[in-house]
Length: 140
Image (cartoon, rainbow, N blue to C red; front, side):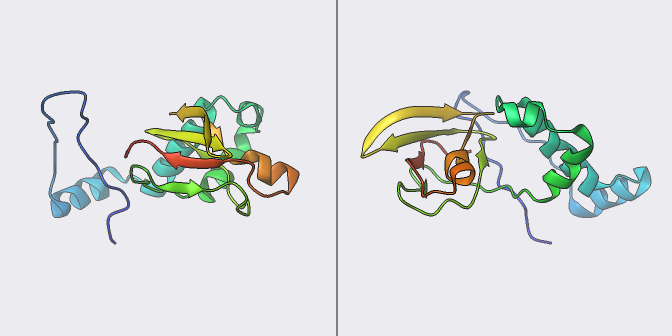
């Protein structure tokens, strides 16, 4: 299985320390303690929903969280990458796991969003085109 994420050191400190374990040892440990990584990842995504300031997820039935988490996909976005542009078709809702994005309308920046904030809901709720553009401001 290929890697599912990229890890980079933070620029907030002068060094980064990373603990690593080789694949064979890792798999031996997982088998020994009988961990289910699919369930662990679903729970992490559910925690992300719970921590966002979106009222929809605050009132979402706890029993339905795992099914919703199964539909999610984690995506790494590079600095200055356009996530979508004003006028695009709206087909996804986004929650920021890390980093920052800027929201602009008619070429003017109107907001900066960061961890646990969300965007993309307007086009989905109103079944309309994107009402603003969103661009990443940092890589995370």
